[in-house]
Image (cartoon, rainbow, N blue to C red; front, side):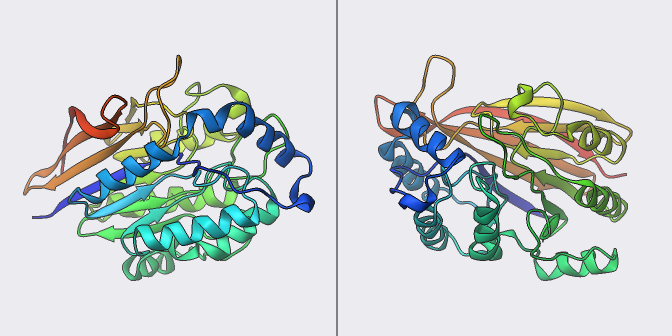
Length: 318
């Protein structure tokens, strides 16, 4: 039987932010830089980020799942630094990544990360075989060409989705697009039929009303319909900088949506301190037993500690 320990984290907003070039400071990037200088740099602290790196590397993790927002305004300098960090943190076969709205600040930024971070957003060999069998062709087109991808760990399938689009100023919306949604439904249905435990990873909250409309997924109703009809045992996401578990009832049983706080933030009056989740999936002859361990930043100690253990339930083989 199979055991998988998955570490899920999100919204690093890698501090400190390098200066963009003068030519990059147009439109939304000026607003983003202003936001960083006035507030965000006080929240996303280098010492918290370093404590996160130190702690997670001490854990016995089988695979890292990073649901986006590595950078802030996706300047060339930020993306270059992000590329170096990804490679130093874990090899591509050890970590799966999906982009967030900050990674996709502009269309040129999306194209850049799809090129630079491609290896962290591509299917494994077995996953590629499944996609080809289903007639799903991935490409490098902006913004959703490489998605959905799938990586297989024994009988566990991790599906990477992208909600990252270049939003207008003052918005942080996402969108999956008709093609990605259609391919997702086909993929999840196949994985269910083949008896995989399915984990879907996306940046934006995958259900209506989990975040205000200016920050929401534009086609969230279409995604919700797929998750209700086809199911995915777990859906993990970021974006809200909050820890939250929400249940979706579908014809196959429960689907759990699990949001996680930022991995680099101090606690504020309305957001928790940094944390990340370890999801423990144990396969038995009858199904899967799943537990969640939360590790949270303790300000007084400047370190992460295990603060919560949540049994997520048992999924029977059908």
